[in-house]
Image (cartoon, rainbow, N blue to C red; front, side):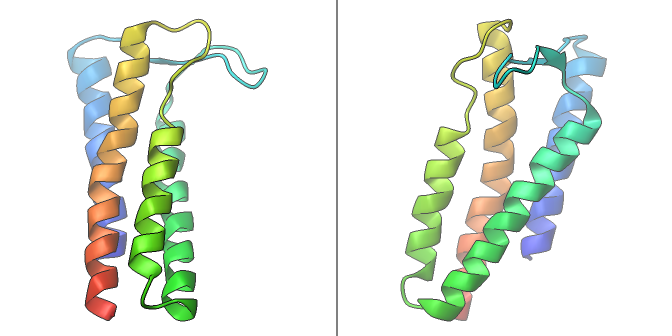
Length: 126
């Protein structure tokens, strides 16, 4: 179920990007941060951003389930929520508020697919 949740988050974001760029004609950009210039959102970036963090989160959850099984779900959920909120695009130069909101929605789409699924599967194990 966890791998399915990651796949659903990825597919939802790809569909979101397709509707946003293809359907609405919006040119979504990432903010200039960490010395990198403003650049367009590429499908490869979306795939990487939708797959790599959830896989790392899955690995962390597995470790927590082995070492602190009674608290694993709570610890992981708090950490996942902090990471999700902390990773939202609050600042950065060269992008509009609309870009920040639309990028934030991409983060929330993955979080909405992954976090509940990981919590449910973790609670079933304990």
